[in-house]
Structure formats: structure tokens, C-alpha cells
Image (cartoon, rainbow, N blue to C red):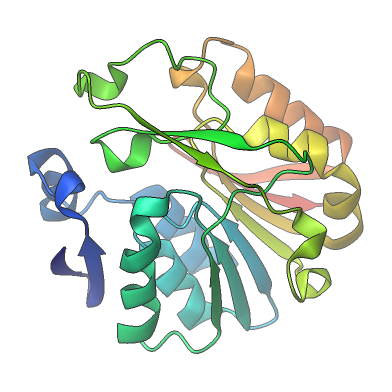
Length: 229
């Protein structure tokens, strides 16, 4: 495990992911930059946030400083210790972390990972393409027993959603429409249609949100901030 400080936040990186591709993102101040801009501008102490796709916990830390509470979920089992260290050593007292995959299905999920830490997903259809973002044959797949969203403690207190799950966004929306309609009034989402077989992926995600009366307030690169009308 390697540790770094990025914008005064302590992050912990497993050896597998510690390489120039990731380190350059920190050096050039572009790691999670789009989501960070949205969180800093649009989230506040009235928000109780559900974050799905914690990764190293950087956005989690930003949220913790801005909002009332954060429930953060990361499926990658290799990041469990990283996020434990992150939440404890950055004193994130209002954050609850779960290492699980959210799904309403009772079937186990095949979660794919690559040496590029930001390329994992449990929902992409390109598992036969073992060269995501130039990382060659680095794919590892984990079998994960999923957790139903409504089984998460205090989930009904949530009013805001931050979603960055590398291709699992559409499935999450389809499975949790009722929850989103009843409880969520703001969403920050990073969409990954450029990585998907379905080139209409982003359009489909945004249409579901539009049908639920969410309006795009801000787009920053491939990240979007939406509020319910």
C-alpha cells in the first residue's frame, strides 16, 4: 500500500494501481476534477449523500466536508483497506463505508477490475475486451454477493446521489426508479458511454432522469449535475 497527499487529503493506493498513469492525474491536478467541481459548488450541509463508486475516497472526503452525512459504497474488494484508512485517517466522522455491490438481484455479480483503477465495473458488457484504456491483459474478476439498496442502514435519509460506477449507471437507475423519485432531489453523475458497446448509453441514462423530472444544471466534461424540477 502506498500513501499520498492530494489537495491536503490522504489517499491510500494498493501496489497494483500505483503507476504513472494514475500518478500523472494527481501531478496534473485532474484526478476526479469534474466531480470535485460539482460537489464543491452544488452540495451543502442540508444534504445526506449516497455515493456509489468511492474509488480511493477523494470525492468522499470532499463530500464529508460539505454535507451532513455520506453513505459511500465501493464494490472493488481490493479497495476495502484503502477506504478504511482513508475514512479513519482523514477523520471522516460523518461517513459510513460499505464494500459491496448494490443490486436488487439475488444473483452474485462478476465485478471486473483492471490495473487502471478507474476502469472497473460490474455491469459493462465488454468483459471479453481485455484492454481497457491501454492496460493490456490486466483483467481480474471478483464474484461479489450483492446488497439491496433498501437494506442499507439509514438509506431513507438520503436526498442526494453521487454516482461514478464506470458503466453500471443505467442498471442502477432502472432498478431503483422508485427510490430516486421518492427521495433524491440532486444528482452528480459521471457517464461512460465512450467506453460502452451501446453508443446510446449516455442518452438512455439522461432520458431516464429526464422522465423522473431531473434537469441538467451543469455539465463539466463527462460529469453532470442535475436537480429535480
